[in-house]
Length: 86
Image (cartoon, rainbow, N blue to C red; front, side, top):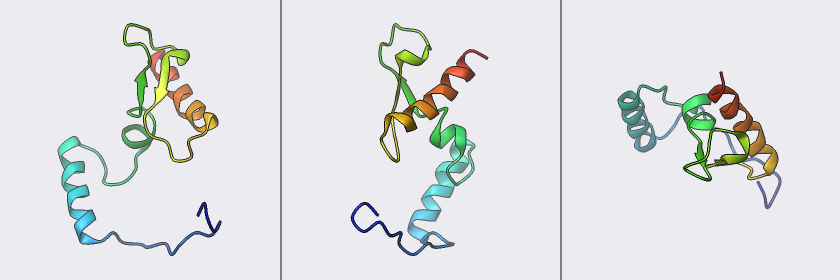
């Protein structure tokens, strides 16, 4: 996409060699076998910059990103901070 600005062909099924391990791991951790908000994208996708620091927004950093912008990190990390304080 970054090169051509065109998306490739979407598929409605995963190949067996990807689907079976994904289903097995999902069952072991009690998650759905797709990208869930909490376990895949937001609430399990952060780390503390300073391990001795608190759960405030300024001390959180994103582990995995799709786009990599500060806006994406801000969108996810504000949810993490909100859940930590709720």
